[in-house]
Length: 351
Picture 1: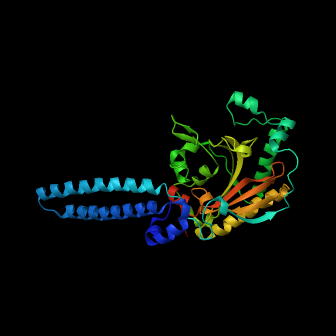
Picture 2: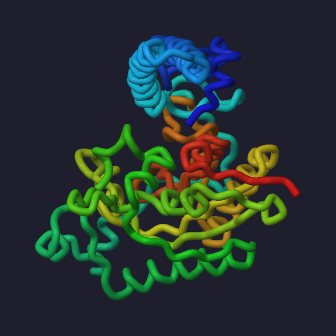
Picture 3: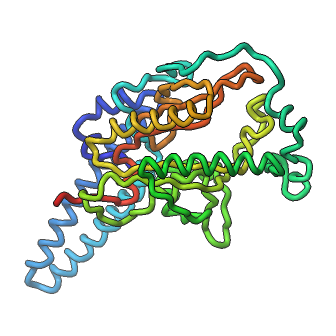
């Protein structure tokens, strides 16, 4: 959730930096509703104070009735204001390029991309017989993977490698539930705007996690963290579930864009003034792991319109896929600033 006080104070700044992420009309409507609700709130407070001072019962009934009307109007305005505010993404950092993916900026490339050569991975896994999509579709449906033999061993080895490396860097491992509440999905920005992308168990009103970021971001919901404990560095190995598979061309083949996949998430709770440096360190951390695996990769600063809803700044790390002759995102590192902590009411206090 954005800082409404900042929006009130600097609406021109918001309109400039939001760019394609939000229409000016949306920001104007939020400001209009904010002004209206604050005016009604002042009226309600005045009526409450007046009600305490009235002497006659007749006057008291009149003030009480007027107060109820104002409180009902305030409740309605609050609901409209919050509903619209909940659809507003995070404010991009000043150095984030405007526009969409065509304005993404390659920051650096590590290694030399080889010319396209050899079969793509979806042909390799078929030759090695390490993924069985046919059986998976019989058990479940299309785009649900079944790894077997060396395919399963390789995946487990990669998870163990990332976990061990992160552990040495001070990231505390946390095993989380595979399902979260609507409150949790709201807290990290998946709800209400992206509900159609999530798998939901309606009877329980729970959602399968699309990423370990969701439970991670809610670990301290409605809590106050002692600043002496910051930064808090955690890693979350989890299965993730997304309803995004479809007609993606070569980006929808093999193990790309499946409904289910394993991931090791790294997440940090830090003081506001440290978040920029922490993001840079996180990007370097991912890059160092890919270098240890001998993978050619590049770091890409995303444009505002290509970032996730909760992000203020995002770097994608893309690996060169020689068989595809293309780059493929394998990690995304974001600074969400206080956007998620405002939604989850996660706070810290100084000594």
